[in-house]
Each structure stands twice: as structure tokens, then as C-alpha cells.
Length: 93
Image (tube, rainbow, N blue to C red; front, side):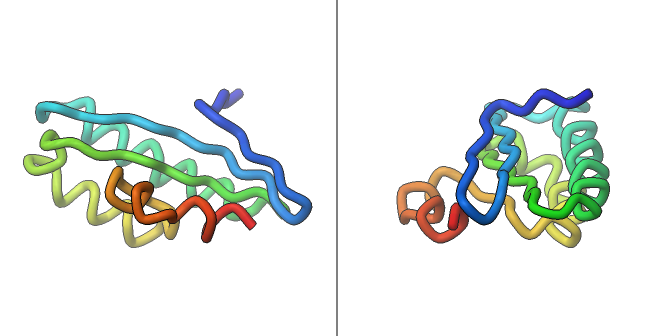
């Protein structure tokens, strides 16, 4: 059973949202990226549900490869700059 950090419900979709910030590298980042990659692929089978991940921090500098692999399967990964530029009004329709 998965509990998301946030859930946004619109007339058309339910969004499960995870948020995190990594100030330093380590194995936690790699595991998180792998876990969310799997979660994204599993959630693609659920009609009316979209998984969204907001993440940022210098820690990703050392884990770029795993983050890139997750980008390939998870269309909704965003960072703080995306949020400042209003991505949420584009995503949550």
C-alpha cells in the first residue's frame, strides 16, 4: 500500500505526488529513482491516475544516470525551478 506525500484530485484525474530534496549524494537517491521508476510503470496501468515527482538538490549530481533512467519512463518529474515557472497549473488539469 502506497501513501503519497500529496494527492490532487481534479475533474479528470487523480495525481499521486511524491516530493523530496537531496542536499548530498548516496545510495538513497539511487534507490528512490529506481523505486519511482517502478511506481511510474505500475501506475500507468491505472485509468484516471497520474504519478508526479517533484525532486531537486545537489545530491542528484552524483546520481545523474539513475535519474536519467527514471526520466525515460516518468513523464512528470519536476524541480523547484519548474514549480516557480508554474508547471503545476499545466500538469493538474
